[in-house]
Image (cartoon, rainbow, N blue to C red):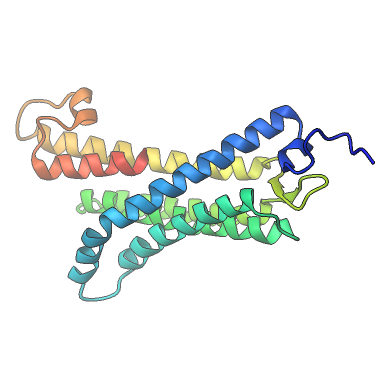
Length: 228
């Protein structure tokens, strides 16, 4: 009996051409990111171990340093599995993906928070402001996994995520705004501190880091790398 599907063995055949194209692009992107993530972790393992060994006590920064990388890897790995392996129930898989993503984001943003607090070590109000903002954004992000929904591709057991809810988009937008504010705050403080010692720092200098002292350039470029 004919099913009307040109290639019933290929689960993408059960989707419309536009949906199949988007699914394939997302799957290939996840595979590429997984390879890059594993490579990044392997390359920096010696440096990461040195950083951890330098710490004499377990602190929130150390914990977030580990969970940021670990859950980022789990998020990408589960995303790949969710798009390449059939499952009897899609929602638990995508709930796990959402949880790993949120833990990784909150951990990474805490490290970014500590960076701006170090730059503004003498200004407690700015440090408190960004800490409060981090709590708000983190609280919003915690609700993201329960909003993630997935379903089987019709006629198969392969999963596809459903339409993203507005609440999830709002949470992601607030997180981007939080990171942007921290990057701008770090850039402005680095530029202001250096301007008092020498000539005025231009925006091109803040973007490139050229002509800045080594420590200031490292702080600035580290923040830029995280943001990107």
